[in-house]
Length: 201
Length: 201
DNA sequence: GTATTTCTGTACCGTATCGCATAAAACAGG
DNA sequence: CCTGTTTTATGCGATACGGTACAGAAATAC
Image 1 (cartoon, rainbow over the protein chains, first blue to last red):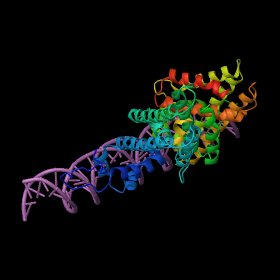
Image 2: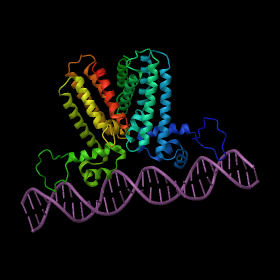
Image 3: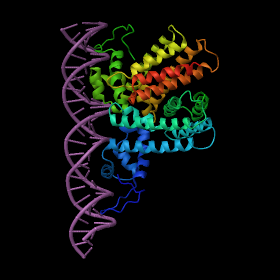
Image 4: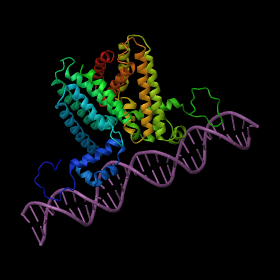
């Protein structure tokens, strides 16, 4: 896949009129709101600002476009997660910050989308196994990020960082689901804050 | 809605060739595997063993059929939940049994469907608000059931039963998501068992 | 300047979808 | 038996869908 962030020697023909990352960013909004099955190629192309054949040439079919979007979304999320976990404060404070940032994204108007992995990829898993695999990989990567955060903290060695990470992830999934189903951000933050000491205990 | 479990005086016209509950049971399998958007009326009618117009006459459109199925599924789940929580054993043992039963259902072959509410209703919530509302109501009812279980137990009053219920629910959602994304039943049961003491601590 | 390569945009195809119109079938009451 | 009423079954229709063919446009290589 050619991206325009890396300096590529201009290839011969007509250059692309779009940037891969920008397209993925715009397409993500549609997939996040409607899900993979619910999003039509027309909506996706319109949101991306280009035509179906261009989408096709660049990404293959709808499933590949969705998976590319999912991976892009996941990479960004893990980036943000690592950044917060590597930042200042106690591990409790950093974990609370992780949840707070996630809740802000999950409850953003107008759609309260929750998390793309939990909220839209999971449903497709039985019908589109590759979507399920990609989603599972991303969740594992998120868990690993949390595990690194706990391992680098001054918390007791038991429970093990991996076990804390599983628990912290579980709470994150639950927040994502409840956000998509309409729970208020303030309620979610209260819940998250109540869980931080339990996870770090 | 007329059900045939209640003894109804035979109405005038041609009697129905199906039982509402049986139809919902069969239709549930399709919705659970493919989701609301992914399930076609042809598949649903075929699974139910009747024709589209009959489905229509009985339930209205696809959304109403889905919501009826969801409520039916939810009522059954809450019934099972109450039964286990009212059963013998310590609250820890009963909670472990709840998770174990849920995991068996969530990882059932061939589709590893997870939970219908978390796995298929959540994704539709932004596009079909009534589905989201029904799902949220059901999750609230499940949480209430767990809360009753904790309130009737001999656990300390803090954390409050409602707080324990929120936590126990969150773990349930996480299990449902991970089941649908392919996590093995044994891993899920290990995770659930590790969480029981934390919830009941 | 010309040829070549690549991308864009319009238009199209076959299929599947939801929902319904219409008529036959099954039963209660008179 | 005949009439009225409700449910089944066949089939239709309009739309939307995913995916592609093809011609024109835009850039570079020679």
